[in-house]
Image (cartoon, rainbow over all chains, first blue to last red; front, side, top):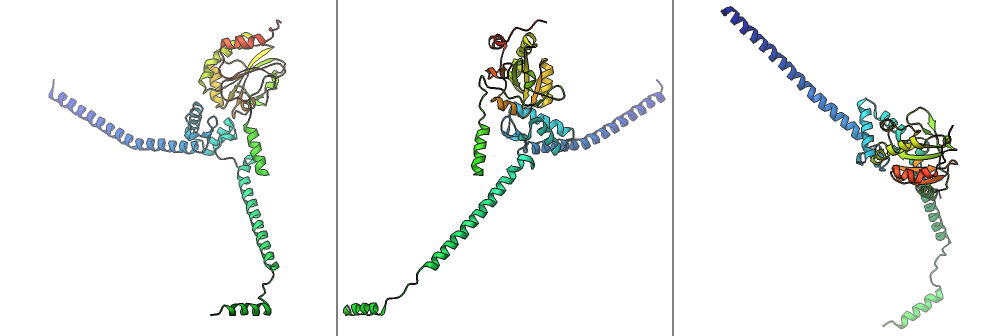
Length: 174
Length: 163
């Protein structure tokens, strides 16, 4: 074996090592870059899932989906997760849920059709109660005022009574 | 008065009772599960219909499915059919279930469970046998098996016409 060929092999091995080290460094940098991205993506997915689960119902359990653990709830959660991963918005996912389960799947009724009554009825009931109360107070004050007007003026004792009172008191004067 | 009206409506609407034998079954239009379009139990007037409420997430429904498939294979025809109603379920999940168990009978999708509530169901699975006029003849409030179907449903069915 010649000394030239031995040094050539050594140089080649060193070059291979350098390339390997460079590749490892690049790979490490990529992993370091991607790991937080993946973690933040997972976190964003979980946040969106949690938000939707807090706003829809488990129709079988009659509770918010976020509180439900039934087999139906599990499938509903999987359905939502699939749509979130597909990049659908919260509103689109809610529409898809309504298409599957009907309006009852929404924790808050929609602001249209019969569901609108859930918002309108309390407001109308409150307004009617305020009007009735105001009317009752107005009538009560009016009635009190007229009672005041009808009340006869109190007159003092007559001269004759006053004289009799003075005489009576004078008899007890010591 | 309005408040009282709402309370009464709430009591009445929540108090759906079970369909009784002899009562006419509801038959609203529902989406078909594995095909496009809508269907209704009305389409089957004139034949005996075993209405089976099920859902893909329901374990007992998985257990009873083979018995229903077998019963449909043996008795299904001009005079009788099983109609499966997938209730409170994701339609894709229901369709996968139908494929997995080879459900060959008509399938409808009752996503919000309203049709089941009109029958007075309290869960799944439940099965209701309707006579040709659409009135309830028999019901099972739980899973069925081959013995239940042969003992209670088969004797009520007319013999299949040979063509």
